[in-house]
Length: 413
Image 1 (cartoon, helix red, strand yellow):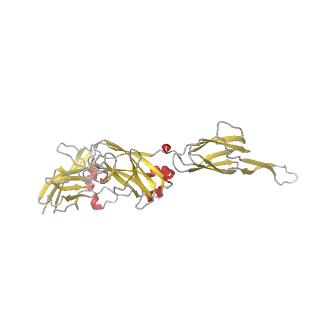
Image 2 (cartoon, one colour):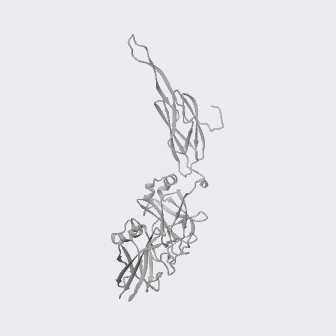
Image 3 (cartoon, helix red, strand yellow):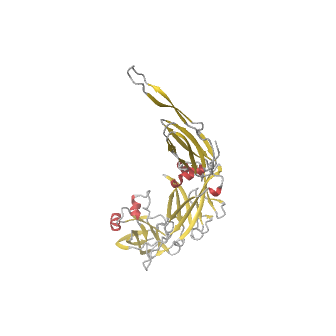
C-alpha cells in the first residue's frame, strides 16, 4: 500500500464474492441466473490505538452496496457507505479525555453479511489533557442553606477515570465503600476530607482549607461538602453562617480507589451565594398562642392551618415556601437558627447565646418530614429560660407573597 498523509493500517479488507446459481427447470423453462452473496471476510477484528491517535484508513473491497457504523461518538467514518467497488474508508478518532482505556466498535455491512472491528483506545497519559468534571451551583445566602448536584451528570467521566458505573460509584461513596474522598488545594495537593457529616465530605474555611465545624461561622467556616447515595449519588454543598452575600468560590475535590490511587476523578465546582431578597406583599396574617415550660432544644409543635396558608400563597405545597422574618425597617433577615430564627425574651429576632429566649423553626421541608412537622412550627427554648413572654413575627414567602404569623410565646417555670 502506498504512503499518503494518513496513518496507514490495513484495518480491514472485506470482500463479498458472488457465484451464479442456477435454478432447477424443465426443458421449456428459461435458465435464470441469480447472483447470491456467498462470502464476507475481514482479516482484522480488533485494533489498539494510542490515546491521541487521530486518523486511520480501512481498505475496503465490496461487490455489493455497503455501509459502516460506529457505536460511539469518538469514532467517525468517511465515507460511511458506498456502491460496489474498492474504497478507502477513513476513520477519525477523538483523543481520549479519560485516564482509562475505552472501547468502540465498527460494524461494516455488505449485502446481507456483516463484520465487526473492535477499537481499543489507550487511556490518556498526559494529566494536563484530562479535564476535571465541571459544574456550577447557586445557593441561597441563608445560614446552612444547601444546593445539590447529581453525579449522574458525570457518569461517563466517572467510568472513564475510575472504571466504575454510576451504581458502583454510589456504593463506593458510602460508609466503608471503595472510594476515598479528597480536596485539592491551590497547588494541586490532595488533602484528606471526612470532616463533615459523611466520610466523603469536608468543612472548608474562607480560604478553602479543610477544617472542622466551628460555631463562630465565617471566616472559620465558609461551606461544607457532603456526598450521599440516596437513590443516586449526590453532592450537597451548604453555606456556613455569616458568609457575605454574593460570595463566590471554586472548590476542587476528587475521588480515588482505596486500593489503586492511579485511578481518580477530579471535580471543579463554582459556588455562588447570591444575595437574597425575600420581600413580598403580606397577603395574610395569623395569630398563634403557645405556652411551654423551659423545654430546651427539644421543640414542641405549634400547629397552623396549612391549607389556608397554601391558598393565600398560591402554592401546591408549603414545603415550596421559604421561612422569613423582617426587621423593624421591613428588611429581610437571614436565618439565625436552622430554617428559622432565634428570638430574645421579648420576641425580637436575635442570635443564639446570652439574651436568647426561644427559637421557631420549620421542619416540614423534606420528603422524610412527618405530617405534624409539615403542619406545625417547631418551638424550643434557650436552656434555663423561664418566666418570659413575648410576640415573635415569622412567616412563609412564596413568589413575592408573604403569610405572617404573630406567635405569642410564654415560657413558664
